Length: 194
Image 1 (cartoon, rainbow, N blue to C red):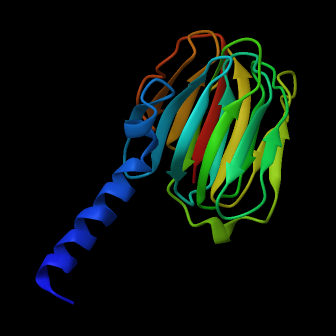
Image 2: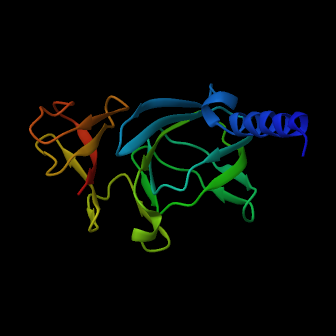
């Protein structure tokens, strides 16, 4: 292969990879909240009629924390059959063990929807197949050898490093043992990494 074609192919490949970054192709819909060696937390927002072009999410196990009620969404995947997410309620939680996703998105709801996408930098093979879902009023924790998902109000403190989500403030912060909790009170959700 000539040098010209190798360089052209490399440039085309780089353009395709950049085009699939959700923060680049859909900045109105995806914003990075923070990232560290353990997690990447993104804020996702969808408005009625939104149709997002092809973009990619990594194969990390992911916790979705729904900050507002939201309508159904349709995902047109490149790796597998299309699927939809039903309407959700503010305060609901969903954990998915992780798989690479390259898809287009169509938001079918009548009102705006906002959620946090917390990607855990853990090996998906460490988790059983399937999903875990919790309704807003379900305070039962989910414990695994690598993480714990739990809710609390006011007096609670994580045991391990954690992403702490405040439903009252619709915000997430990183917490290390020994630090002051980032939110003083209210309804919180903890994603602890063991």
